Length: 308
Image 1 (spheres, rainbow, N blue to C red):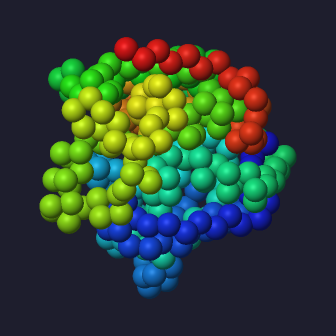
Image 2 (image 1 turned 90 degrees about the horizontal axis):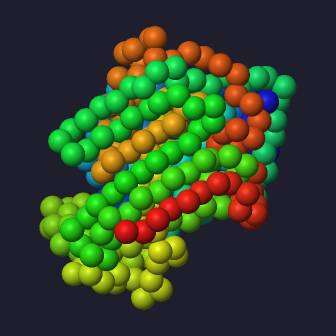
């Protein structure tokens, strides 16, 4: 069954990089609409930006989509992860600025808003992208791969010089609401020196300890500390889920990332669709994909993450 929202969810926040206030709504849409962004602050004929990997134009600091008129929306990955994690297939996302609000730096506020708005289902079947053979992209010691699996699952490895992060690995089988209960609250992160540099060139104006984890010389600077010991690798999984959601249909397969970021995952989708023998459309079985029903679900998903 396809899902949309029952009522409209609204969000207010600031853009991470521009720092400007942003209002955003996620509204119900008819079956078959897919996920579409609408920039209500530009002329109506230029407003529509489909959530599709072919429209990704920047992956340096976030995932940015740009339409044929040059109108863009940035930092879509946390919202797209929440939409995928809640099993939303059709929605209209309206916003009055060039960035999705950063909220607390995770997907949890979006999941909570969607759950509060409620979900509506139709009898239309959901078709997913089933991986038939392995597709991989590499860049030095970075790698992203999709391989066959009967459910959507993920493996991720990261390694950072700062000992506050270090090496972490995570394995996820994202079934039965595991996204909402295991990954959605994990925040974006960065090193203090990176934040200072970005601000010096006019970026990260909306960033703060309220919407990101900041580390420096082996310390987490946020007074409240981490939400989970392995929050860093779990957030990288969250990012990958949001970027994979731009495939246009749920992935039925296993994603493996090693030091991968937005750019690697987008390259992987391009490589996948350039290889027609590597995938096929197939029905998605309920409960075997990203279809969390509530952020308050018990931890029934199989998620194991090991901090190194």
